Each structure stands twice: as structure tokens, then as C-alpha cells.
Image (cartoon, rainbow, N blue to C red):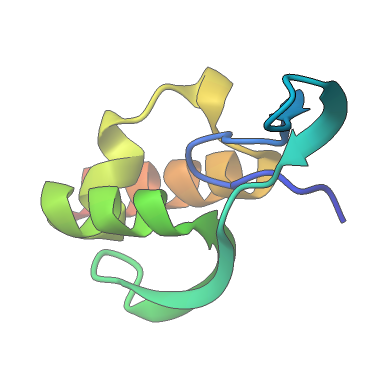
Length: 96
């Protein structure tokens, strides 16, 4: 399983671990991924995702999973999240 957030696309970064004597060795900066279950109001069901903690705050700030997906660009979403976004758009279009 890739170490990548399914909603924001945040992934592993690389850099240097710098010692007191200024020696540099390679290291990896891993995203803070969490397995969460988010409720979709439009679909009326729960969705399990592996997202970063910062993405969870963004979802709550935008007003829920549906609002986040509708505002997000398709290029930054994973395939599963893109499919979820299409489902939400269809459901909202059918409701109107």
C-alpha cells in the first residue's frame, strides 16, 4: 500500500538528517496517515479512507466529505476518491 493520502495526495518526502557536526544523511519524511471512516451525507453511508491528519482537518473545515470532494480537483484525488466524487455528483444531480 502506498504511503499517500487518498484525498490530498500528500506523499513521502526525502531530505537530510543534519547532525550537530553538520554531517548529512538521507532520511524520509512520512505523512501522518490515519485510517478513518467518514460519513457521506449525499450517499447516506460511511466511507473508509486512508488520509493524512491534515486532510481530516481540511474535510472538517470545508463542511464534510461531500463538500471536500466537490471542491477538490480530480488530479489530486486517488482513483477511489474520484469514483466516490462521481457517485456524489450523480446523487446530487438526481436530487435536483
